Amino acid sequence: MTGFPFRSVLVANRGEIAVRILRTVREQGLTGAVVHHAVDTDTPAVRAADIAIEVTGPSPVAAYLDGDQIIEAARAAGIGAIHPGYGFLSENSGFARRVAEAGMVFIGPTPEAIELMGDKVRAARFVAEHGFPVVPKAVEDDDPASFLARARALGPPLLIKPAAGGGGKGMRIVRDLAQLEAECDRARSEAQRYFGDGRLYMERYIERPRHIEVQVLGDAQGNVIHLFERECSIQRRFQKIVEETPSPALSPQTRREICETAAGIARAAGYRNAGTIEFIYGRDGFYFLEMNTRLQVEHPVTEAVTGVDLVLQQLRVAAGEPLGFGQEAVAVSGHALELRLYAEDPARGFSPTTGRILAWSPPPGVRVDAGVALGSRVTTAFDPMLAKVIVHGADRAEAIAKAQQAMHDLVVLGCRTNAGFLARLLRDPDFAAGELHTGLIDEKPALALDEPIDAETAARVLGLAAQALRPIADAAGAAPALHRAMGGWRN
Image 1 (cartoon, rainbow, N blue to C red):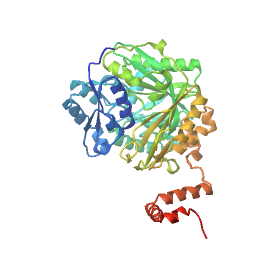
Image 2: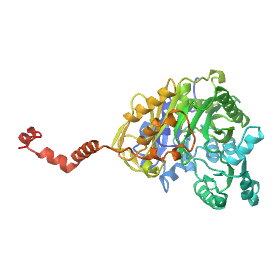
Image 3: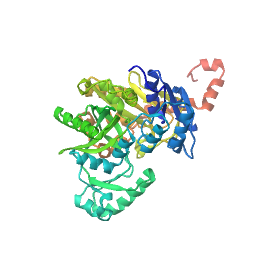
Image 4: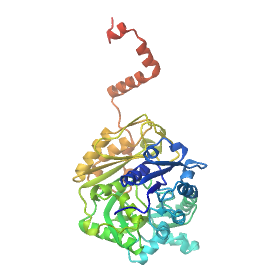
C-alpha cells in the first residue's frame, strides 16, 4: 500500500488496547491520538500518543461513552479516522454512522453489520436462516406471552441471556425450572441497567462446554478469510481469563469445519474489517453463539501464531484496500497463550482491588500489553484488567512452560492481583492435559486460594517490610557510624 487516505487516527479508548493500537498506527507513520478522562492523564496510553484530547462526563466511563463529544473533539483536532478498540463504543452502530457523517473513517465494520450481529437474537436467526448450526432457543420477541412456556419446553438446564448484551452481563444458568421466572426478572433488571434493553432469550445450556472462537477478516471487495481459532474456555462469571491457539480440543477436520463455518457466516453478512465468530463446542458438535464486531481482547495470540498484525489489517481495510493475502497464505506456527492480569482478589470471589502501582516489572522476553506503569493508580472506575501476558512456544507444552516462567518473573505491587491464581492454574493437571471447559474454575475453588507461606519465609518478609517503614528506617540511619559498623554484635 502506498499511503492511507487519512493521516491521523484517534483511539476512542483507554488502557492496554489504546497503547496497542497506537503502536501500529505510529509504525505506519500516522499521527496517533487518544481521548482520555482526567483520571487517565498520566497513563501509558496518553504518553504513547502524539495528541491527547481530554473528555469529560459525570463519571470516567460516561466520558468514554460520549460519542458526540468524542467526534466533535476529533473533528476540531483534524483527525482523519477513529478506532474504537473494544468495549465502550466499539459495537455502537450509531457512533460508527456518526463518525462517517462527520467526514472521518470508522476503523471497523459497517453500521449495518454492527446492527445485524450486535443484536444476539437477530444474529442467531440470521445464522440459522443461512443453514449454520445454532443452539435451540426461545426468543422473547417472538411472542412475549408464551416466552416462559416455550423456554420450559426446551428443558433444563437453561441459559438466560440479554438480547442486546455481552461480556457475561445479565446471564443466568437455571437448572430448577421453579426458579425460572425469578431469574428472568433478575436478568432483565441487569440487562436494562447495563445495556438499556431488557429483552431476553433463552437457550439450552450445554454442560461443560468449550468456548471456541474464530478470527475473521473481510474487505470491501467481498473477500473474507479466517485466521483460525482461539480456545477461550477458561472463564469466571462468563469473563475470559486465559486464551490460547490452537485449541487442544479440535481435530484437523473439526478445525477446518468450524473455521470454514465462521468464514461462511461473515461472508453471508457481507462483513468487512476484523471480527470474531464465537461458538459453543460440546460432545455433539459446535453451535453459533454470537459475533463480536470488533477487535477482541485476545487478538494477540492469533498474531503470535500467524504473524498477521490485525490492527494493521484493520487500517488497510478501512482505507478501502483489499486483503493483501488469501486463505491459502494463512498458516499457524507453534502455540500461543494469553494470560489476563486482573486487579482482583481470587480468594475473595475475584472481587476487584485498588491501589497505586508501587512496583511494576513485566516478565522479560515475552509480549506484555499493559495499560498501567509504575505509579499508575488502579480504581474501580474501569474493568480491572491491568495487562495481558502473551507467550509463544513451539508447542503447547513449551508455551505453558514459558507462561509459568513469565508468572514467576512478573512483579507487581500496590494492589492484589490474580498472578498467583494464574500460576496455580498453569500447574493444574487438567489444564496441562487440555481438558478445558467454561466451568473449570468453579469446579476447582482451591485454585483461588493463596498457597500457605512457611514460618521462615513469613518472618523474613515481615522483617523486610518492617525495615521499609519510615520510623524504623530513620532510626537505623540515625545510629552513629561506629555503632553501625558493629553489625549484629551483642554483649
